Image (spheres, rainbow, N blue to C red):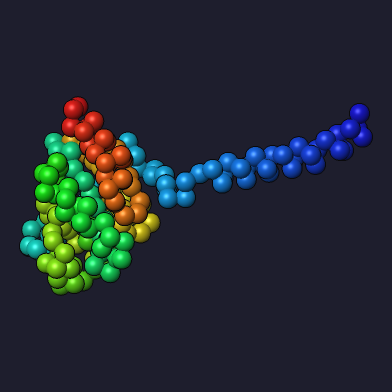
Length: 178
């Protein structure tokens, strides 16, 4: 019996490693899970980009389904997704709050003037602390937040037509029904 185990154990370990490899390869590398899904938004109150004397925070958005989009003028992918955010903004589906991440306010304002401003408001996260609280890995990242202030969906990477129509809008519609 001991001799049988001696041959079986390496074979079992091999198949176990093979199963982990197969499972890992079948995952979507663009999907980074967020520990904040179905949890309240981190508390923040930041200076507005266009009116630094005014603050905007998650408490101001209570009672509304809204989108938080992390962006920067230095971000190449943000430039790619920007027309889709402009389109969403024109449709007036929901408020879009921009979290301008680690960016010079003058650069951010110039960027929005050049490419259009889809945001209901943008706030400046100069030191990046709010982005850290949201678990941001990099720009762009987008969060759908319900009327009670709970994060219901997170998209990492640029939004495009497919993401907008197949992922974001269905979540938003469902949240607006509630």
